[in-house]
Amino acid sequence: MAFELVPWRKKRQSELTWSREGNPFLSLQREIDRLFDEFFQDFGALTRWPSLRRRGRTWDAMVPNVDVSETDKEVEVKADLPGLDQKDIEVTLDENILTIRGERKDEREERRRDYYLMERAYGSFERTIPLPSNIDPDRISARFLNGVLTVRIPKTDQEARRGKRIPVKTD
Image (cartoon, rainbow, N blue to C red; front, side):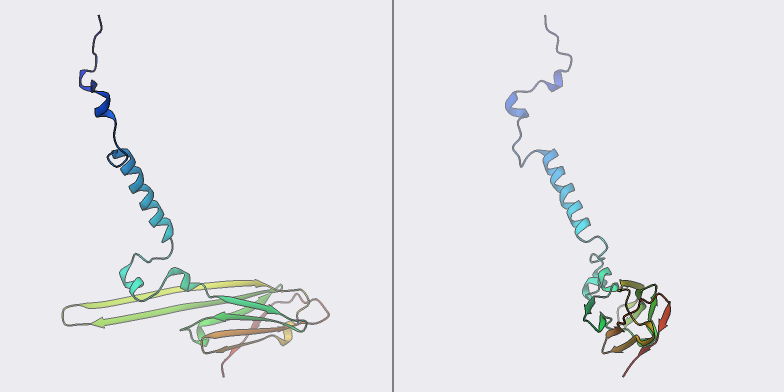
């Protein structure tokens, strides 16, 4: 004699078979995958904030793009720093490591008849670039013009290891 201990589970096989679209667990898995994909795609970019997306600003904008080129006579470093002033930039050389630091500050105020909007953005950045050992720290120069910082580091036949702060000039 067979007893049915769980009578509410007794279903016909056809009722237990779900299609891929009707499977609630598959739908849940797809939704979770989609949410994780969106989260990691935008991770750190802050693009979900409408005010930042509208203005075209992302977290990556706080890290300047840098081009480094080298010849037999010098190393040249160019950094894109749009919207910054010379006073917001600091360039240092220590143990053949060139460091570019800066702060971006932005404030926007918008007054309309039916609303008032005030946004502030602040962030600092730092880029470090290792340099060859045969540079001349006494002749290094930095120039900031039209949002581009250009640092020229002449080479010598000797190795240099001293630390130095480099003044940034404008034209």
